[in-house]
Length: 634
Image (tube, rainbow, N blue to C red; front, side, top):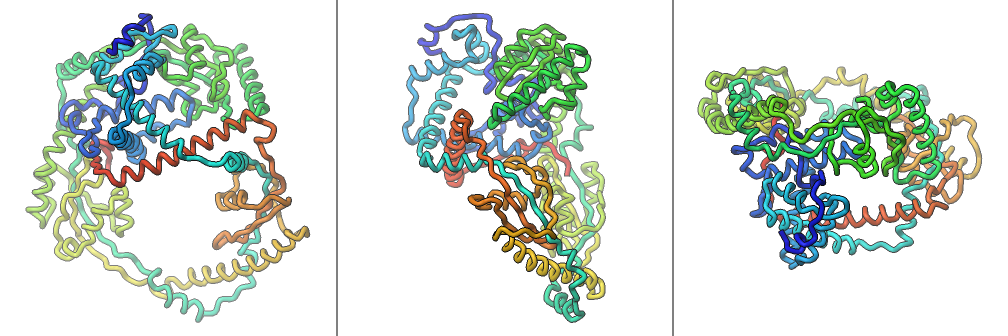
């Protein structure tokens, strides 16, 4: 530990864990228990720098915990999405790339700057003073050394120094920023009317020769796609689980060897009702939210047993409302400070008054307090399931080469592979390339092989293809139907309807342009059926379609009412009217300053992001998709 930090150490009883590095092990997903091959193989390499599975997993869980705790829109299934997992890894990759650049550019953080930063970190403090005990406890729980932790923090500071330098280059004139922000926060009173193509259908006649001409010109559109009936066998880690066992001794051994990682500080279980307001909320918006919170609080004082009912009905936290406001357990540092202070000052069963945070007004109930270490019997089922899955993954990895060789060497049938690996030969219904790709979760490689001449004509097995992590497939074609044209009589009714609609839409557009000219000249058209006006902003469409909203904020609203129009393909000519414009930032200097700061941060982030993309394009990056995504069914 740096000597300067030792000299400033005070306080001994704090219960705080550094969330960015310390994630309770019990929160980890299945693949986070991997300690064999999966634990040693990096999830990615950036040049010669490895990103470990543990580092990736800790970051993923940190994001999950933060989103749950801070009342953001939380969807647990999002964290199982390959795209979301990739985005987390991309962030770690970018960090490595920027770190390399800072080393090359000789960015440095001195010992004094490092120690001052660590001394000031609230995660290592008790009663406002740095605690050596908390610091050493964090190091121990994460299997680190002081030198490793300090090197990591030093790297973070160097990267932040580089990011700040890049962000400062994203300069925009103050007048430009003010105008952009004003526009971004503007509200508009909007209405719309449609001149429908269907109203002109009766005026349209389509001649037989027009239908025939369209058919001849667009024959490529009227084809039955090539289709195959195939069979396949699937070797998967999930399918190997039944053949894997884990003894109670192995589970207990894993628990004992990783006890430090299971340990955590005091956990509090709480529920809350959130009446939220955003960063752009006006004083009036906040007052309305406060009034609603006071009303709910009064109802709870009359009947505390209605807490879950009122949470489901009124809470604006989508992650907990449907669960009666339940947030589960969390420790210090997981929630925003006003929320945390209230929860850790309450008795079990107590309902707080109104607690204000940056997310809105909370009414909190403390549901329970748990100890510092989960019992073995509580952890046993989860650890056993995770160790079984780990073994199944290892067995899958061992069998993939043998499976691939079998389907290649005995390419005339899938039965030998099915028998050898105890698999079922599956036979889905007929499908085209596109339908097959959907069946295999977007994997086009297997479809390219299935529809290749060698497989179709020679009835040979495809190569084994990993259609998703831990799922290896080999297929062969049983029957084949080539692409074929649809007859004219078969498609004639559809072509007639299409041509009528096209011509009717042109008539609607012609009328609409005449009407638009009248409206812009200040005249009214009594035939138009305008919808009732709605007030919209950039984030709130009030039921208007994306196409309409795209027009609303393009309209020059210097002179009101202002109009625009567009063709909604195959449906109507749409007229859009802006009747009034409200500049939300006018007269609210605090909101204006926050909004301009937001804009500058976004601009700086975009600049840093662009720079990062250029680094990534030049880098040598390898990603282990199998470890990244985990088990999925095809």
